[in-house]
Length: 488
Image (cartoon, rainbow, N blue to C red; front, side):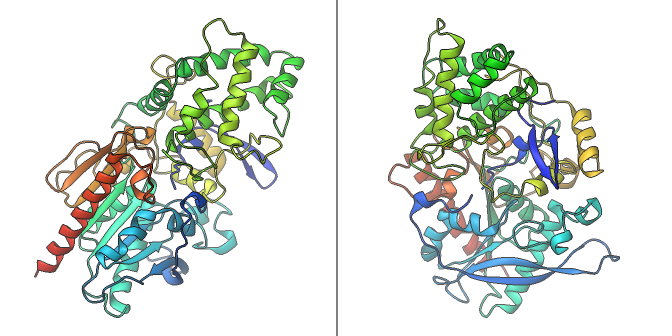
């Protein structure tokens, strides 16, 4: 069982331990990040979308939610920036994709944020959408892309003045993957795409499974002396102390856990919770205060590492006392929580169960650790165990190579007008496109950037590289719009 990917998933009244799923849930997006102090103004609409775009047996429809802001739109000439919704409530992504809001006036653009089917309010079968695998059968990236393509066509047909508007797809993380794939699969629908922190190559046989956790470890190693070393040492320290009832009680009290550890198995889940904590910190290591997954200080990993600078003589108890203080940086930076909840590490705005199903069908993203190039306990990627867990949970088995077949894998030479942006601090850059493929399929790497930092609002503490990345992205947008206007 993977120590980095196991979660407690409440389904009805049964708790299931899900292998290899949780670490695949991107933050991948956010609830409103109040650190931005921005108020956005949009209107909410619903579009009757087909449940199945590729068959003729299921003829039902559902209401797909989308948000529109047209305050700065220049009708007949202005483009449409179309956000390809992720695995969560679309209002969350709308409120956090500050880049789009800040460039709307400069481009004279309409902003559209389209919700992904099965997330937020866009439920194909209402309250029964997650009832069984039969109802979940229409949850896939292919169906979602078709939703976006149909919605764009109808917007251009029905929205006054939009008929000739150039449409640019924008997305971050899984949404970034969808933005790129939308340009690839429906090139007549969008003139270009910005795919921020989009791990389109994090699939079997495309990149080494250990690169993700290696980047996490590098972030900690660079943020304080002995930081990664002491996290690596903490796993055996937890095992030793958790071997007794007294030790479990000490761990529960030291970490102020809401649910005390009562067994050795509890300590295994406790380690998985900590491992996911370090991963999430790597994804949201922003240079300013932010509330993406949790309220955090500027450069939170540096703050965490201040508690983990011990030398090799430190005792296990002292080491874990430091780890507990480090964990509080992530879970209780505001000081408002009386205890730490090990059943949750991120915002509730993400659609966990829906993403687990997607991971169990087409979104198969191998991750592994070796304890040498990373700071985690060794854990090999076990596709069979992963598949077996999916069978137990949903009655389905993943198709490991389907994404490569469907979207072309690492061969992007036939495509055009796609920007892949990645932050070097972001572990998901391990599966991202970090080199130019052609003159129009380009990579932007932000050395001090975490997970889709370029899509966030401007901040006075932004590194120069992210400012330069945003300026370059806007330049490409303008060129694509002009290119579309010149087209016959």
